[in-house]
Image: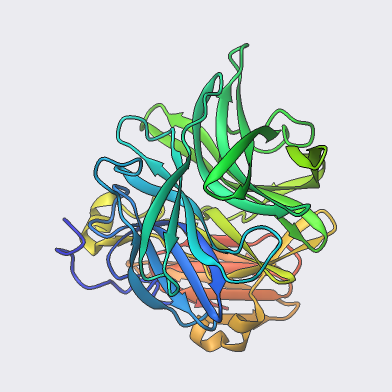
Length: 414
């Protein structure tokens, strides 16, 4: 059943978390602010509730609470490097490094072809001022020729020491047959002409080898939060032999130091090291592939929440939609812990956002299923906030790790 053939959204449709009533949604992409308008893009298949021939959906907001649908920003192009899908990446108004004058709305993303979807090309798309059209495309970095490379994707743009860099997540099979997830870097002062710099970090590095084992890091982010450099990666581990699908093990983070290495005045390397702590960005079962955006002196983050295993593919096909983004979260570092809180804009419109704040007693969340049985699904220990929207629950403790989960029934907050 295609999205167009499906019935109207069901009572499980999280209308505060997605405005596109049809199709598959996964990773948040291209998040940035252009003037006073927030632009959030995301992986989207408008034609069915399954992952296939991914477009970039697009919504805009002026307050981070009320969102409006816009036409698809990126669509697979026949015969081009993104013919099989426009996969994850970032968005920005490109002023060039170190300046804030003028600027061109720009999307930097992974283009995949049918023959080798694990080996993406990095594409730069230029748009008009209101981001309604992106029609100038450049392959800034084809798949690099790296010994043992098993996959690469998901560019992230970073500024440090007066220069601009692009990071991509990758996997490498070493000479001894072991597999490492790696973070690769390019110098990209000119976004259309990148210079490869090499590895920034790997899952074999001290402090990172104790993270959940993965063979490729997806959707890498490297942002400075409260004076601490934070690496965020999707923990992707090969294929599930029984199902032929990748194993997604959550999104991990590490606190450490970022070093830009120079040859004279020219950057020649980038290293993330001196790791002091690591953990999960969200400990819930239904959260993955977050994207962070530096907004002045704060860092906001959105994640993807999928339809979980309690929902059959047939049920998802019938409803005609799958997946949603989380509400925005503001990141903070407290000691060795990365914490998330709803930003002030969301809390100021808590009713419209479906958010409730709680004191030190916290709260209990239960769901009543179709047979009338009530069971506990989540608990907020101590102060924090909870967002409930049809089939998604976001639990954000004030001083702990968030939890995102999907449930299908009547959700009650006690």
